[in-house]
Every structure is written in C-alpha cells, then in structure tokens.
Amino acid sequence: MSSPDTSSGMFRTPRIPLIDTLRGIALVAMASYHFTWDLEFFGYLEPGTATEGGWKIYARLIASSFLFLVGVSLVLAHRPAIRWKPYVRRLGMVAAAAAVISVGTYVALPQEWIFFGILHAIVVSSLIALLFLPLPPLVTAGTAIAILVAFIIDGWVMPGVVRSALFDSRLIAWIGLAETPPRSNDFVPLFPWLSAVLAGVAVAGLLRRHGGFARLQTWQRKENILTRAGQHSLAFYLVHQPVLIGIVYLATLVAPPPAPDPIAGYNRSCQATCTAGGNDAGLCQRFCACTADRLVAQSLFQPMQKGEINPSKDQRVLDIAGQCTAISMEN
Image (cartoon, rainbow, N blue to C red; front, side, top):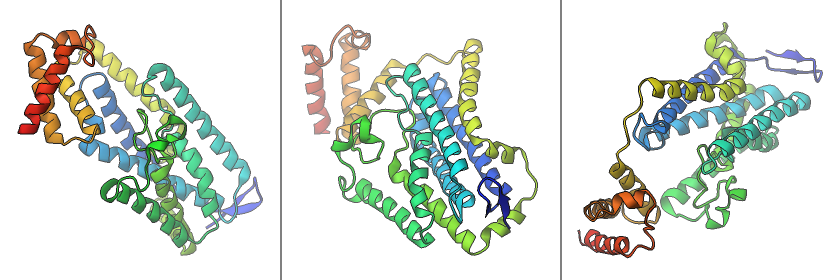
C-alpha cells in the first residue's frame, strides 16, 4: 500500500482518509470548545465555565487528540526515511502560524498572550519526535508512559519531583516544568504533552509493522467534509476563532449579555487567589464570603472595585481581612 514520492524518489504510505476525518472531528471539537470560551469571554456564560470541570477535561482531550495525530502523521509521511523538503516546508508553515498567534494575542490580550500554545507544541514536538522514528515502537511507547507517570507522581503523590519554581519564567516555562506557569489563554507546554505525540508515533509504528495502515485504507474510501477539513487543519485553525469571535460580537449588539455580578466575581477571584496559596478550599470560601459581606457593610466594596482604595494598604480592609481570617479558621 505505497505510492511514489516524487520529491524524494522514495515510497511512502498514501493519505488515509480515516486519519484526515479523525483530524476533522478534532477540529470541530476544538471549534465547539473555543465557541464556549468566546461566550464566556463576552459574558454569556459564567466566568470559569470553559476552564473548569468537564470543559477543562474536554479541552485536554482535544489537545491530546491533535498531538497524537501529529505523531501518527509523522510516521505516515516520513517512514522509512525522512522526506526533508516537505517536512521543513510544513514545519515552517506551522512555526509561522504560531508566531502570528503569539503576536496577535500579545497585541489583543497582553496579560494572557499565547507564548506557547498548541501550534508551538506541535513545532517543538515534531522536531523531537524525529529522533524516535527509527526506534522500536515499544521504546517510544515506554518513553511516552514514563513522561506521563512522572507528571502524575508530581501532581498527585510527590509534588516537586518534576516541577520547580526555577522554571516559572516565561522564557523557560514552555518546557513544562514550571511550578506556577505564567497566565496564557492557551498553554500547551512541551512536557507532558510530548507524550501524546510519542504515543501517536508508537501506535503508528506498530500499525505499519503489522499492516495496520493497509486495513485502515479500507475503512473509509470516500472523502467527506470532515476529511477535507482535516486535510487543511492549519488554515481551519487560523480562521475559525476570528470567525467565531465575530459572530459572538455581533450577537452582543443584538442581545447583550447580562451584567456581571460584582460580588460573585469578587468571590471567584478571592477564592482562586486563596487556594493558589495552598489554603483549604473550604477555609477560602468562608474567608471570601466574610470579607465580601463586611466590605459591603462598611461601604468599601465599590471603592475597592473601582481602584479608589488600595486593599493592601488601607487599614480598614486589612482589619476586615484579619477578622475574617480568625472567623474562618474557627469554623
């Protein structure tokens, strides 16, 4: 099941419609997630909707599927040998698109700009994955599993085994070892996400060894709209979000979102800051509710929200914080 590659004189596996279709499905899923993010950004959904709970898991599954398919595609396109000309051309296109995303978000959202998102991860992971193409698939799979296990241990068993505050700077946070990464609207660090690419390389390597790609060719013989979208994934990625943002913006002109509740917003921000400091979630909830009530009662809430008083220097606010800390710890 090979076709001639006129650019290199070698033979390679032809495009498999099913792989393109799976990529197209991932694109649609990504667009649905970004649409949810846009609705939250413009105020139609509660803050945190797209970044917590089920939506957070959904986003990670989408990113994992894209990176897994990157690994599969590398094996399809560059075995038995790397086709350098198309490889460099494709990598250059993705790198250029990643640069455009970084510059655009830095201008639009300087506090949360995308310095290392999914496209950046694809570029760096694609370079590293080349080293694994000639290796046995089980070695590649073992490496992917080892990366995942290391980060699971760091996150759930022994914090600090992998991550460190030494990597918190944006200059090196992209590696994935930061304890507290800089804020970003799309952060897909090299580790542990490299494991998804290596998993794709390993699975594709096993399929190639055992004739799996030949069987996949028979599972879908005709192209459909998802297949064609998957064949132009980079263009889809670059275009879909501006289109979705434009649609939601037009919706705000016709049916504006409800005004946000300042107390609810304060509680969310307060609890996020409190729990980030390593405090118990229940204690943080009690503390934030207490401070909100007392700030309102003493007519300090609105001036503080408007920036008319500095909460870190105003003695009245500091007294409230001290009183609420004591009350929260008693309960």
